[in-house]
Length: 403
Length: 105
Image (cartoon, rainbow over all chains, first blue to last red; front, side):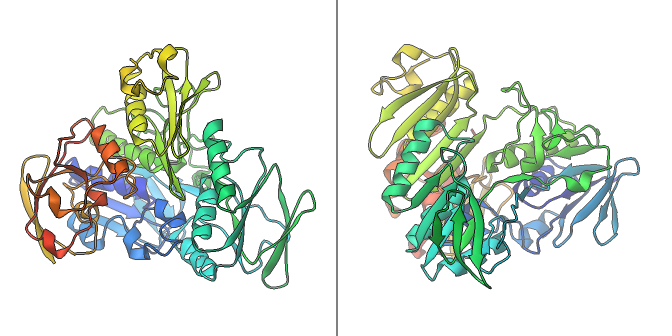
């Protein structure tokens, strides 16, 4: 009997699930529901190459229609799921149409944190999540004027760097005392802060944007210390949260995200979740983690497919992330833990390696322009190898020789 | 359009057509046997690793130091023939090129 897998969400995680199902020999129906009208596309270039005009929209496409047809993936763009009935095993769409499943994969990703301030609806105020958001922001910045970025996280800082490359004057406003507070180790954040300031970005730390001024279009913003910054564009880069509101009442267990085990299975054995919307029990970490990254989306997409195919695969990949700002390539692997000791290993004006050390093992490595260290560190974390901490600070000893 | 000969991870050889102007990675990820290219061409992950046929590597510009460092650290890297396909821009002179996908790490 032919089975049907319905995948809700056609981003990196949803598409990967579909591809991996076919690669694993799944012969039933694969239905891939996407809320946007575009083919599945990759998000990392949005804040970088797309804004700078280096990539057009098509260049972000992950797989073309010919590929989807060839793989018999029934892709349905412009389709939003509204509710899930796990007893009768169907997804209800916003259009009220109902789609039955044998297995369901929740890959709805994340939605933007929106903070409504006075003036939030003025022309020139942007968010960045979708390709269309990026194209609208690109059109705005092409004039090469002024931009205020609220939020000094990855998106905010990548946009700041892209806007500088376009010749805009840029200010970044971050509520925390450090940029990238949530994920970057101190020395990495400090180095990047320095870099942004050297590039002429005005960075306001520990400040909140409180008001956006303008009549039809933004012309200035106010900060909580009374600072007034003139601008004609604002980007609100205030992070995202799992897009799981539509699961209310379904009985699927959620907390910060959809709770899944190391096989990506939810509280219902026929329902799986992958990517930004999943809150995962990862064997490396005591507490469940929500990982917003391409690596996680791809790893979990593969795991969902494996589980549906009856294979016993479990999450074991070390989480990894990257960012690019100016010519600084930031590569990070593992997650720093609260008790860790932070060690700066290499200190060169253009490169930096920072390690987050547990008692005798490496928990995380974060590098700027040091791919050799990064790759070595990623392997050390994966191996759970104990490390000679004494020699760690000696940059002349290659990382891979420290076990 | 140019033609490439690509040996996949199961040893099967595919003759494929590619447009000049794309990177080799962008062409290879279109196939179910192709490369994962997780980072999308940022020279950050090593998941688009290929071996260019012996003697043909000079048909591409030399790798920059970032690519070289990353490739050196890959488990299956082979001296002289390993490249990251996201860093290779295809041109007319690459018609007929033969290459092999490196094993997954």
